[in-house]
Amino acid sequence: MREKAEIMDESGIKRAVSRIAHEILERNKGTENLVLIGIQRRGVILAKRIAECIKEVEARAVPVGILDITLYRDDLSMLSEHPIIKGTYIDFPVAGKKI
Image (tube, rainbow, N blue to C red; front, side, top):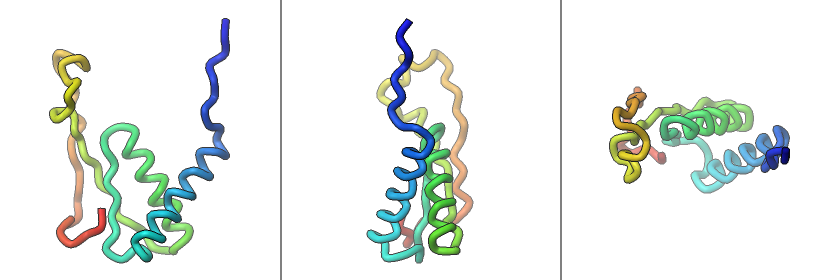
């Protein structure tokens, strides 16, 4: 039985998240008006990890929202007859924000 290939180990993921966080900070010149919105399911985890890294670097928390795009997927009929909607949760205003 073949072993499943490992694309990125734990330290590789941490480095990638750190690079992404630094790139976001650089392109947006800091955290002013910056918010992150993760797409349900795995994108939320990534957005939260990036926010944690930004907080470590800038000593400032960045709001994180959650967006569920289930009903807008072009492969919705292949997912399930009754797809599970997890919901959108954005508890901050997005007008004028860098998302």
